[in-house]
Image (cartoon, rainbow, N blue to C red):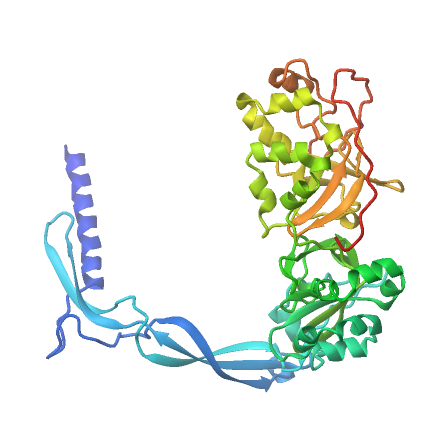
Length: 496
């Protein structure tokens, strides 16, 4: 009992100290003379700002070695803002001591959580490139040298050592003229709205400009199809992204909204830490950061970008003569909405209708096999969008199915996936939210034993894939398996 009393005493002492601390923290206060509860008041500290801040102006002060800055054209930027504050009133709060039962009340000046207070001015200081200058890329190392890796985002240390050596041109139009992209300019000059955006001082943009060599490689029919009076604006707009995105802000799987309605571009990346190659919708960016301007950046691409305003699900519907079975399975599995979602880029390896055994399809559509149906469909979907230009550089891709990956094999004959080397027949079908590759066989995520349990009488056509270990395929005849087949369809034109 002595021990129990000691424990109870300690608990009571601890509680008393805690309540005393709470009491001291929220000690009761009296209202100022003549003030009443609900009257407006001024808080003891700074009032909390709310709403949207308005930029009143900014000043720049160039920094030098005295400030620890070795690189050129680095400034201390002071921006002055005006913003509204929350309103404050005198309010009373009460609480009860947990053990003693004593009720304590205090009165203080507290926020009403309403954004209708006074307007205040404040200043934010930062270190950034001076007006008219931008950061350059770190030097690429010599062959075989370790060198310094590229930085994804600029930071304070890189500003301090490298500075901002790139002088910004006045606008995008000056960049295009300086780069002598005459063919691209010829098509653009016919579009006054686009020209206005190129010369605008606001609304930054990113232009993926088609090289003169790419225009020279277009046949007359393709050029007339893509740059006719009707299609020219859509084609050019699909090469212009919203916002200024220089090379150091490009990353694999990035989705860029363009000026064209419902058209997005997908960024892919290959290479290593020191040498990186970027692609947009499967087309190589031959000269990233070819020119930077006050209102954006120009990247030069090697070809006309393939694009589409339709989602993956829309394309499967439009080409139902080839993909109706796969789309039906996706809808029954509740995954069609995933293929309609436009804020994520995905790759779909879509089996053609000839790839499916009708008995296998009927089995997956049974109510008891809904879970296996989802696994089967998700095994054919991966993230992000991988056009063949980047897919050929991968060793494997992770699918959306749990613990299922696909081994990628690239040869002179083309790209194939899985241990069974299923070839990609019709590749790089672009969509607003990704890309579709048609395949002549299904990707089977189930083993023979598991598939026999799910669908008696049907065996798997391949071993399940496992990331990232490459296992040599076993070539064994399987007369009861799902028959290979499919139709090889020639690629469609780039402007679909």
